Length: 145
Image 1 (cartoon, rainbow, N blue to C red):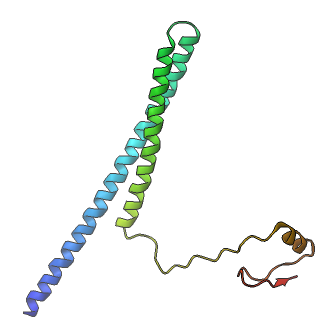
Image 2: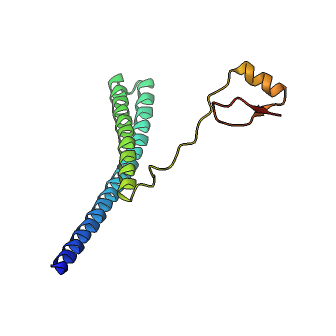
Image 3: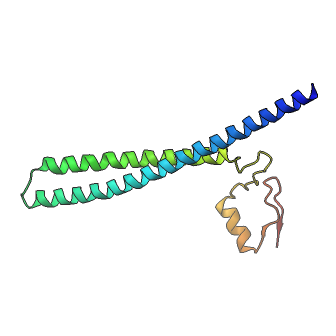
């Protein structure tokens, strides 16, 4: 009976490890795919800027109508929007990768206290007297020379 329980625990452990490895693989492939998409969109944005510049020059010389300029600008703006969306998705994919790898953050890490800003006049008077705060604790108002 104990042998079956040990075997069951081992199989559950292997299934958990395989699931974790699969999750990491999916996160890596998702992040890499989004990075590839960002690179492609970056090249497309550059080409769109060239197209806008070229169509504007042709319009200014009287070689084409303004519709070509508008169409080139519309395509450029669409690519800009896609690029921004892709940047956001890449950030989400990076967070998913960190989570799949185990996080990198712990709940027990304390955030250091942030001292509230002092009014400008009090800070100037304190500085002119050569005094600085002893503690960063907002409840303490002691100063030290």
